[in-house]
Image 1 (spheres, rainbow, N blue to C red):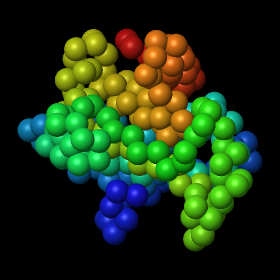
Image 2 (cartoon, rainbow, N blue to C red):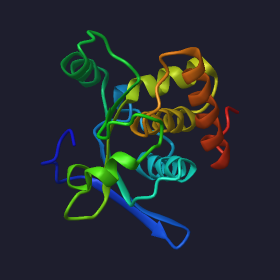
Image 3 (cartoon, rainbow, N blue to C red):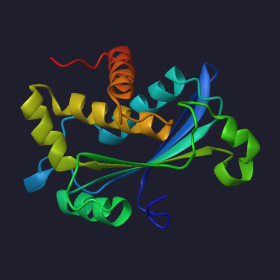
Length: 191
């Protein structure tokens, strides 16, 4: 986790007979520039999207993800510190698992002690960092709602946490199809 000592968090837990237990620890530091506020509950929407991705990817484990929604400057700082890239971006993904193949969770079976939180029994998938300013900018640029843009960024990042990448056209196309399928399953459209 990026900030394991954070205690004033928003913790959303879900689980039912139909699917695995899922925990999202969300730290929403800002919702946008100039004190803008999203017209949706960011933590709740992120939880729905994360769970939909894990269901779509047939994750066989109870899982948890840490989400940080922060400002442009912090995302720029983190991008430089952790990736060596001196610019901001819309979303950062920090996978905890070394996937050889997308959504192949067999590495967990081989090294449960490395990936399963002993206190919760949950698979630690990794961290997501969203740039709140970019949510607003890209929603306007692409002509859809901030809710749709935020959900898209969460879905995109969750796929990275499940081992997907977009270094080639084929990989990028596969991610786009999966992202759109998750958003459609939740009724989140571009309009």
